[in-house]
Image 1 (cartoon, rainbow, N blue to C red):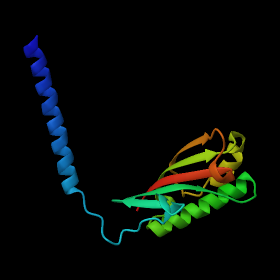
Image 2 (image 1 turned 135 degrees about the vertical axis):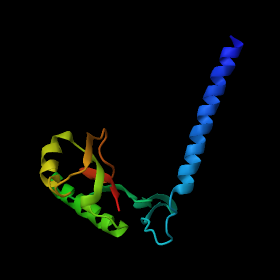
Image 3 (image 1 turned 60 degrees about the horizontal axis):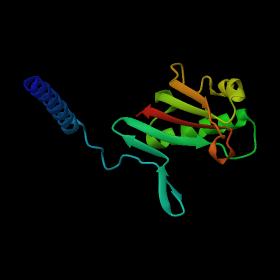
Length: 153
Protein backbone atom coordinates (compact mmCIF):
# COMPACT_ATOMS: atom_id res chain seq x y z
CA UNK A 1 0.00 0.00 0.00
CA UNK A 2 2.81 2.42 0.89
CA UNK A 3 4.61 1.57 -2.37
CA UNK A 4 1.42 2.27 -4.33
CA UNK A 5 1.11 5.71 -2.74
CA UNK A 6 4.74 6.49 -3.49
CA UNK A 7 4.22 5.41 -7.09
CA UNK A 8 1.19 7.66 -7.43
CA UNK A 9 3.03 10.58 -5.80
CA UNK A 10 5.99 10.08 -8.14
CA UNK A 11 3.67 10.15 -11.16
CA UNK A 12 2.01 13.32 -9.92
CA UNK A 13 5.40 14.96 -9.28
CA UNK A 14 6.61 13.96 -12.74
CA UNK A 15 3.46 15.36 -14.34
CA UNK A 16 3.81 18.64 -12.46
CA UNK A 17 7.47 18.89 -13.39
CA UNK A 18 6.52 18.38 -17.03
CA UNK A 19 3.86 21.06 -16.86
CA UNK A 20 6.27 23.47 -15.19
CA UNK A 21 8.86 22.73 -17.87
CA UNK A 22 6.34 23.35 -20.66
CA UNK A 23 5.29 26.64 -19.05
CA UNK A 24 8.93 27.72 -18.76
CA UNK A 25 9.50 26.92 -22.45
CA UNK A 26 6.34 28.83 -23.43
CA UNK A 27 7.42 31.85 -21.39
CA UNK A 28 10.90 31.76 -22.93
CA UNK A 29 9.43 31.53 -26.45
CA UNK A 30 6.93 34.36 -25.94
CA UNK A 31 8.04 37.59 -27.59
CA UNK A 32 8.79 40.47 -25.27
CA UNK A 33 6.54 43.49 -25.54
CA UNK A 34 8.19 46.35 -27.36
CA UNK A 35 8.88 49.48 -25.36
CA UNK A 36 6.34 51.37 -27.49
CA UNK A 37 3.40 49.04 -26.68
CA UNK A 38 0.50 51.35 -25.84
CA UNK A 39 -0.92 51.07 -22.36
CA UNK A 40 -4.14 52.65 -21.19
CA UNK A 41 -4.56 55.72 -19.09
CA UNK A 42 -4.41 54.91 -15.39
CA UNK A 43 -7.61 55.77 -13.55
CA UNK A 44 -6.97 57.17 -10.08
CA UNK A 45 -9.02 57.09 -6.92
CA UNK A 46 -7.78 59.77 -4.52
CA UNK A 47 -4.32 59.86 -6.16
CA UNK A 48 -3.90 56.08 -5.86
CA UNK A 49 -3.89 53.99 -9.07
CA UNK A 50 -7.19 52.14 -9.37
CA UNK A 51 -7.12 50.57 -12.84
CA UNK A 52 -5.95 51.13 -16.41
CA UNK A 53 -8.36 51.98 -19.21
CA UNK A 54 -6.76 49.25 -21.34
CA UNK A 55 -3.81 46.89 -21.35
CA UNK A 56 -1.98 45.27 -24.24
CA UNK A 57 -0.42 41.86 -23.68
CA UNK A 58 1.16 40.21 -26.68
CA UNK A 59 -1.35 40.56 -29.52
CA UNK A 60 -4.33 41.02 -27.21
CA UNK A 61 -5.89 44.19 -25.86
CA UNK A 62 -8.11 44.21 -22.76
CA UNK A 63 -10.44 47.17 -22.34
CA UNK A 64 -11.88 48.10 -18.96
CA UNK A 65 -15.58 48.70 -18.44
CA UNK A 66 -16.91 51.81 -20.15
CA UNK A 67 -20.13 53.44 -19.00
CA UNK A 68 -22.21 56.46 -19.96
CA UNK A 69 -22.51 58.98 -17.16
CA UNK A 70 -25.08 61.47 -18.38
CA UNK A 71 -28.87 61.76 -18.61
CA UNK A 72 -30.31 59.68 -21.42
CA UNK A 73 -32.02 56.45 -22.37
CA UNK A 74 -30.47 53.03 -22.99
CA UNK A 75 -30.02 53.71 -26.70
CA UNK A 76 -28.08 56.92 -26.06
CA UNK A 77 -25.98 55.22 -23.39
CA UNK A 78 -25.25 52.17 -25.59
CA UNK A 79 -24.26 54.37 -28.55
CA UNK A 80 -21.95 56.43 -26.32
CA UNK A 81 -20.30 53.34 -24.79
CA UNK A 82 -19.68 51.75 -28.20
CA UNK A 83 -18.20 54.98 -29.60
CA UNK A 84 -15.91 55.29 -26.57
CA UNK A 85 -14.93 51.63 -26.91
CA UNK A 86 -13.98 52.22 -30.54
CA UNK A 87 -11.81 55.22 -29.56
CA UNK A 88 -9.95 53.13 -26.96
CA UNK A 89 -9.50 50.24 -29.41
CA UNK A 90 -8.00 52.58 -32.00
CA UNK A 91 -5.69 54.12 -29.38
CA UNK A 92 -4.56 50.60 -28.46
CA UNK A 93 -3.90 49.71 -32.11
CA UNK A 94 -7.00 47.59 -32.72
CA UNK A 95 -10.53 48.07 -34.08
CA UNK A 96 -14.14 47.06 -33.53
CA UNK A 97 -13.74 44.34 -36.19
CA UNK A 98 -11.00 42.68 -34.09
CA UNK A 99 -13.06 42.37 -30.90
CA UNK A 100 -13.28 38.77 -29.71
CA UNK A 101 -15.42 39.10 -26.58
CA UNK A 102 -17.74 41.73 -25.12
CA UNK A 103 -19.31 41.72 -21.68
CA UNK A 104 -22.44 43.85 -21.34
CA UNK A 105 -23.73 44.88 -17.93
CA UNK A 106 -27.24 46.33 -17.93
CA UNK A 107 -28.83 48.36 -15.17
CA UNK A 108 -32.19 46.84 -16.14
CA UNK A 109 -32.70 43.63 -18.13
CA UNK A 110 -35.79 45.23 -19.69
CA UNK A 111 -33.34 47.36 -21.73
CA UNK A 112 -31.95 44.25 -23.46
CA UNK A 113 -33.91 44.64 -26.72
CA UNK A 114 -33.17 48.37 -27.12
CA UNK A 115 -29.48 47.83 -26.31
CA UNK A 116 -29.35 45.11 -29.01
CA UNK A 117 -30.81 47.50 -31.59
CA UNK A 118 -27.84 49.85 -31.11
CA UNK A 119 -25.26 47.07 -30.59
CA UNK A 120 -26.17 45.17 -33.79
CA UNK A 121 -23.73 45.71 -36.66
CA UNK A 122 -21.17 47.73 -34.70
CA UNK A 123 -18.50 45.00 -34.90
CA UNK A 124 -18.59 44.18 -38.61
CA UNK A 125 -19.89 41.05 -40.28
CA UNK A 126 -18.30 38.65 -37.77
CA UNK A 127 -19.47 39.90 -34.36
CA UNK A 128 -17.71 38.91 -31.13
CA UNK A 129 -19.01 36.48 -28.55
CA UNK A 130 -20.96 38.29 -25.90
CA UNK A 131 -22.21 37.89 -22.35
CA UNK A 132 -25.06 40.12 -21.18
CA UNK A 133 -26.22 40.34 -17.60
CA UNK A 134 -28.35 42.65 -15.50
CA UNK A 135 -26.34 43.88 -12.53
CA UNK A 136 -27.94 43.60 -9.10
CA UNK A 137 -27.90 47.07 -7.60
CA UNK A 138 -27.25 48.75 -10.96
CA UNK A 139 -24.20 49.75 -12.95
CA UNK A 140 -21.78 52.06 -11.08
CA UNK A 141 -22.04 55.77 -11.80
CA UNK A 142 -25.72 55.70 -12.79
CA UNK A 143 -24.94 54.41 -16.28
CA UNK A 144 -27.65 52.27 -17.84
CA UNK A 145 -25.03 50.05 -19.49
CA UNK A 146 -21.35 49.24 -19.08
CA UNK A 147 -19.22 47.19 -21.48
CA UNK A 148 -15.74 45.79 -21.52
CA UNK A 149 -14.02 43.79 -24.24
CA UNK A 150 -11.07 41.73 -25.37
CA UNK A 151 -9.66 42.22 -28.87
CA UNK A 152 -6.66 41.33 -30.99
CA UNK A 153 -4.22 43.83 -32.45
